[in-house]
Image (cartoon, rainbow, N blue to C red):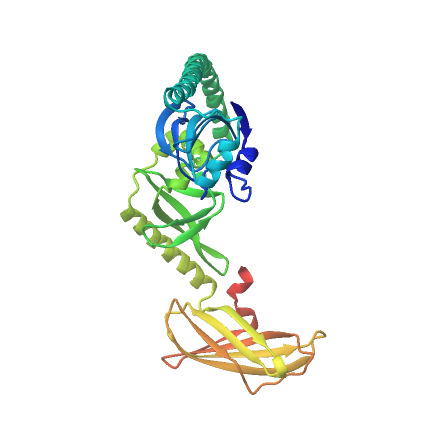
Length: 394
C-alpha cells in the first residue's frame, strides 16, 4: 500500500489534472463503504454505502479489483470505492504499487480498514464523551459556587441599593420622573408629545400614567394639560424610570384616585383660565405672526391674527412703515384683511404682490396701527404700543 496525496491522486485519476478529488466525469459511480461524520457535540456517527462527490485532502490506495475495475481508498474519516472507466482502469492497472486483489483477500482488506476506523472512532467518541461529562461536572460545581457568591453579593447590593434610594429621594421630587427620549400619545386627546429626559406626573394608577405637558403658549402665557397614557414599554424597560418609581413607591401610591373623567374636567378649567389670561393681556387680539419682503422693491406681506374679543372681526386694517438702516422712512401703506374671525379663532392673509414699492436700501418694517372693524359696525384702533405679536414671546 502507499499513501497518495490528493494532488497526486487527482493527477492519476482526473482528466486535465483537476484540483478536487474525486469523483468527476471520468470516475463514476463512487461510494463511501464506511464514513464517520460528527454531530453538533463532536460525536462521530457511522454511515455506510453513501454516494460521494468529494473526499478528504489525502487518501491511501490499499487495493484494486482488476475484474470489477474498482479502486479502494481509505482516509482518516472513511473507506471508499471508486469504479473507474476503461481509460483510468488501464492507468491504475499498470501501477504495481497498488495491490491488485480479489475475492477473500479483498474482503479481508476492506474489513481491516473498516475495523480500524471503528476502533479509532470508538476511542475518539469515548474520549469526547468523557471530556463532555467532566466539563459538565466542572460547570455544575462552578455554578454551585457562583450561586453562593451571588447570594452574598445580592445581599450586599440590596443594602447598598436601599442606602442609594434614600439618598436619591432626598435629592429628587416624586412627581418629576425620568423617562427615555421619545413620543408618547395621549389616550384622551390622541396627540403625540415629544418627551426629552423627564416629565412631571400627577400619578401612575393601574398601569396608566397621568402627566403634565405644556401644550400651548400665547403671549408668554403657558397652558398645561394633564394627559393620560398607558405606561409605555420603553419606560418600563428604562432603568432610571424603574428606579424612580421604586424609590418613590410610597408617595406615588398615596396620590388621590385619578380617572380620565376628572382629568377632562380639570383640563377644561385650566383651558378657561388660560383664555382669560390671554384676554386680559390682549383684549382685542394679537398677531400670531407677520412677515414682509420687498423683492424687486415690491412689498409683499402676510399675517395671522388671533381674535380674543367676543365680537366677530369683519375687517382688519394693518398700517406699516418701512425704514432703512439709518431709520429713514422708505415707504408707508396698509393692507386690509377681510373676515369673519370669531372669538378664540384666527385668520390668515397673504399678499404675494401689491402696489407698494420701496427703495432698495429698505431693511425693516414696523406696524404702526391696526384698525379692527367688527360685524356690528363698531371699530377699535390699536396703537403701536398696543400691538402684540406672539412670535416675540417664543
